[in-house]
Image 1: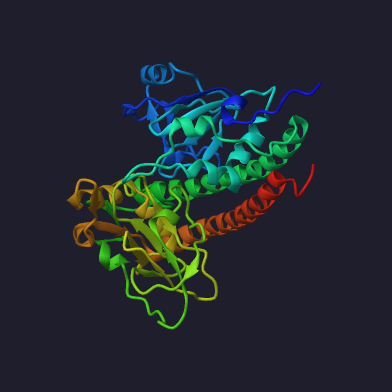
Image 2 (image 1 turned 90 degrees about the vertical axis):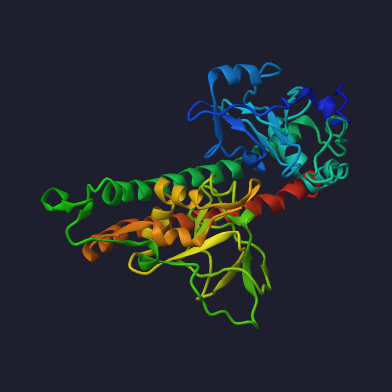
Length: 401
């Protein structure tokens, strides 16, 4: 006799545990602290996760220790995202998150994760959002969420495995992108910060400036929010701060729509966050998604950087350095909740402009890495599109497995 299928989320889980309602003290190293920005649609994003000590980890996991196959759900900002804990991920929950442990005798964890992300369940889950400023989902609504249409366990396992395979490929590509980006930035650090460039042994360095190089105010080497011609008659890509990927050189392609205000940019520009907390989180993006000479219009929440005396790749790597970000952060003014970088701060920040030969060599090495990142990003977009098209059809039974 087959067991009765669970009718509500609480019935499908061994437990559903709310997070501690307190701010965890963070450290430079330690266990990843899962906050709502770290909860993607299916997978956790641990790249720039805050870290906590062993002592904090023990305290924050007293209610339950996250294990592979467990789900973490975001209660707000944005509410509804669900990710599964994979092998090797030892994490603890930050605020506004919920820990679910699926009962594997009733549901397949991978399938349940995607089932909760499907439009019907998302609609039910978010219909009860409350809160005057930050909308959030109540625990009682999470526990009693209806699981109408849940297929048999064997069917769940096949469908869950199929959908998870897409995310496995996406994650592998993301890791390759991160390694390529890190390789480019490390080369920049080695040559232009540590000054261990080819031929450094035979180059005189006077007051930190190698012979044949210049040290100039940033605006001489880089245009800050440059003026770009943009036709008022055509549609343009409009990019908001939420579109920027925290740890990537590219932007998730946004919706094409008309815009009449904001910074203008083109391929090869670097977008640099000017507001908190995005700047502290390192939100910086290399523009490489426009086609056929398109020009885009973006939010005023970031600064456009464009190389004058240096290459686009050099600009991006410079913008990702600690000194460049710290200089920007120190210039911030405004309320504590929404401070903004002052563009004038770059007038007093000096940058090194290497010799033309060395700059050309650097660009020759890293540009193919940037292009490969664009290719991998394009592959990931196609994989996500395919997964997202498949998801509702599997959930509705339109496609059987």
